[in-house]
Amino acid sequence: MYRSENCGALRLADVNKEVTLAGWVQKSRDKGFMIWVDLRDRYGITQLIFDESRTNTDVMQLAKSLGREFVIQVKGTVIERESKNTNIPTGEIEVLVNELTILNEAQLPPFTIEDETDGGEDIRMKYRYLDIRRNPVKNSLLFRHKVAQEVRNYLSNLDFCEVETPYLIKSTPEGARDFVVPSRMNPGQFYALPQSPQTFKQLLMVGGMDKYFQIVKCFRDEDLRADRQPEFTQIDCEMAFIEQEDILNVFEGLTCHLLKKFHNLDIEKFPRMTFEEAMTTYGNDKPDIRFGMKFGELNAVAQHKDFAVFNSAELVVGIAVPGGATYTRKEIDALIEWVKRPQVGASGMVYVKCEANNQYKSSVDKFYDQNDLANWAAATNAQEGDLILVLSGPANKTRAQLSALRMELGNRLGLRKPNEFAPLWVVDFPLLEWDEDSARFHAMHHPFTSPKPEDMHLLDTDPGKVRANAYDLVLNGNEIGGGSIRIHDKEMQALMFKHLGFTQEQAQEQFGFLMNAFQFGAPPHGGLAFGLDRLTAILGGQETIRDFIAFPKNNSGRDVMIDAPATIDDAQLNELSIMLNVKA
Ligand code: ASP
Image 1 (cartoon, helix red, strand yellow):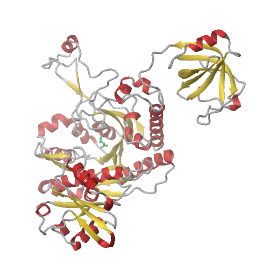
Image 2: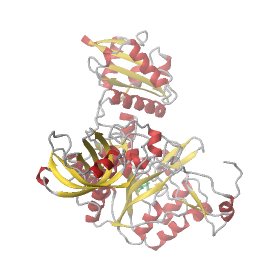
Image 3: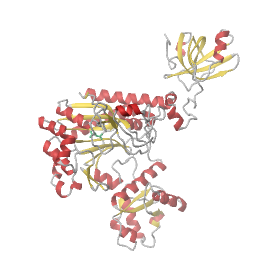
Image 4: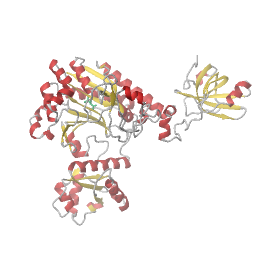
């Protein structure tokens, strides 16, 4: 037996108990005649004491050789501490050691294994197994396990069945590039790793599984954006014989359950907002509604004066920054510079200070009188003491820029409180999205999403206006997940592929299996997927997902611990019938 208890278990009530403990040496303090060692395992820290007058000389000697992170086993007696540590649950006792075994020595770790470590991001990624010994990372992984467990229980109790779908598949087009795997047995052919189990879960519905879920890895070879991982985990679900309302109810229920379980929050009903409303009010399809600063459109009150910049713009739109009227010129200039950075891309910004007694001071006083500016204040809901910031230009771009500014100010003003939770459903997404690069429409969600029947007539005349039965769950400015009611009719699916620019042959070649299946009695169905990594991070009160993933990749998509990706040798390449035309 390696241990009789773990290092987080012992309390005052255990005094006089003979125990065996095992773990890592967190630190040791050698006072010559007495040595204290903090022994750590996953469950906590127990203080060990070696005392010249009570511990035999050999053990005392061995204790002096202990270094940080040595793996040891001790036997001893639980005693009451003389000076208690009220910061830790085991702080009232210590173990007086009479036997010590060094199970393994350890090199000095490259950073301190403490909550506040001296190790930078890179070194901690390289030695991730040491980082996992630290509380913040360890606790995040334990928390993730609890979230996953709750999700499994909740859905299982509702008769959802977890089914595994394959990883070696044919590409599912969901907007990203596929990771591919060469097939040795089929030279020149490749599997793709799933961007999601989308088509398989639909086939499970054709197969009569009715309610499916899976906590599953998905792979997307996207250009890396901050806090994205090329492989990530989804809570993937699908249901048959349901309408959009049924799906929203089930997953609102799941989300409420998690908020109750982990934050003791009772949220009655999630608000719903159409995509269009989200875009016009927040410039964003995943609005953070924990704070206001809603968009006020100013075209009607700012155009047709002498200010050419606004007159020629498709959209003039502003937000009111609470308390911003006191900002100095320098602070405002810094904000203007912020929106002009290439990442945001605005060409300039107009401001109005709303001062006492309805007095307005703006950067465009030459063109607008007090009355005009009062109208702006009304449109942006600006109060005395606020600062109105206004951008103009092409509608979509300008909304995105103002949204970026709104979020930045929300952060700076401390309005995005990690312990406040504001979920909402964004519904009625457009079916199609115009893509400038390829100069054609793409599916906004994916090609299996069904259009709203009442919008079908627009498909030929005004495709961009067709709305889909598609929805996203948004939490605190993050997209937690999304899904849709699917097409379950072969003709309809073929029509959709046509609108997405597939020839009949291409559609047959890529999706023949799905359209064939639809001829064998496909039930009406729909579903969604939540991102587990992000959901866990947000429930854990954090914005970055990395600590909630045991072995994450860095910003360039590399695993710096195992050093992947890596080259493979010629023999392996030959076997796969692959000839490289790059030298790595
Ligand atoms: N497969 C979709 C996704 O990964 C989710 C869904 O439509 O169910 O975003």
